[in-house]
Image (cartoon, rainbow over all chains, first blue to last red; front, top):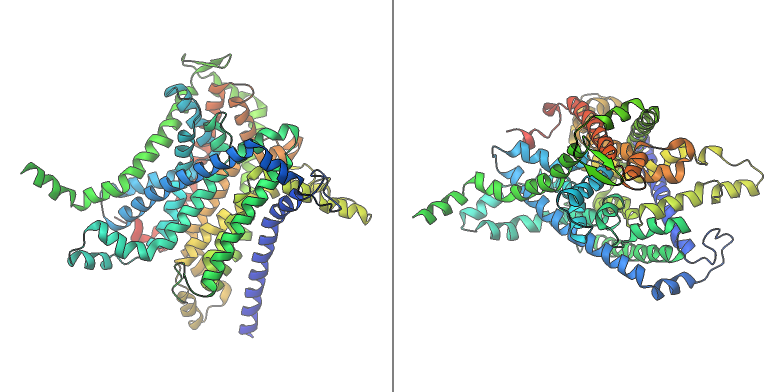
Length: 270
Length: 296
């Protein structure tokens, strides 16, 4: 009796997860579907054409936008992950006096909305530093929430880490760097990878922070924002579709790696 | 000799801590706190034809408090953010629980799948939502074909904007609760069961309080951006959903009244801070399972 109700709860929760996936992906699939449609405004009933893909590759704007978005994503993900990894290890490992303050600072960006980060960095750059919009400010500004998210992800996994392993390595004469590379990193890399990926995604497609920091430099979201006045270009749908194909390919590879237990991604058995 | 001293000092835990956590903490101070401070200063200044002038006054705040429009925008955003955060909470808990408990070795993949839609920009996804559920969207058109009246709630109403916000932010809530549940010791539930607790009682007395920090973080992670949200309301909300964030963005865009915009930003920040402090009061570290992390 208990057993059956347990199974039903489990089934219900699984169904809810599935429903959420459907809800989350329906607009994404719509975008992919519409990118192949002849008429983007009302693409029903289906009439397929690859016209938007031709236009996409003929135009240089979208290439620039994709390149800038990638640069922004990678730059700010690297910055976030490095800062967050150092912060999480420092805060968990050493009982320093400033630990509480450091923890507060690392979490603070989570409590400031993107819009506020965007306008305040714009005001600071433009009126205090006299800087025009540029990609480096945008990378730094995007790394603010990125660092917090990366920190949270790494911290939540590192809480269970046993620092006695590192101490043991130190006793046998390993320096801190070697100790990190040979003991800590092989164990915690999945969460560092997760942190990198999340901070990349957040920066890659950020609208509100990037918009205020970039000036006239195009990224994928800012091009979308800018073209709204004239209706979204079909090229944007095509570009989004290509990005999604790449993402799905990466997930498929991850699934295969997990399925055949080539890489565990931090899972250590039930 | 002095060099030796330095090397010895560099190996002390305090210095190692400073070396590891210092750069990130400094980065937040320079890149986040200084800009926030600058808009606090600007909020007491004056803008005239797109230029900021440093004569100190309270006019911006006076305008914010006396104009009923701003009050309405603010209250609207507040109600919206609270409703969206609670909806996300209800949806996210069972899902996060399922992934953490039954996800097995695919747990990470299942969570990352929730994040993957973010690869498609917010504008494209909101347009996608509109095309599916909007007034001339697929759902309502299909209903029309069968002679059913279209669902009015989905047509440029605050409810439609709310659905859009839930769509955008529910993954944050799931991830926050999931990260908490992954560190939760599910064996405690077995102990409760052996001692005769029904599943619901075990949930209310063990699972929920021990994962409250993660849940609270999730609530804040959804509430804060929703309070400031502008884009979603602009697309889905229609005329009765103009939000505080939309009005704020306008001060830095079309109208160029930076000083007033800064004051609105400060107000937004103070409101967020109050919510966070209120949430902070609900957290009892001794009942959280996180004591080892923060306790000095």
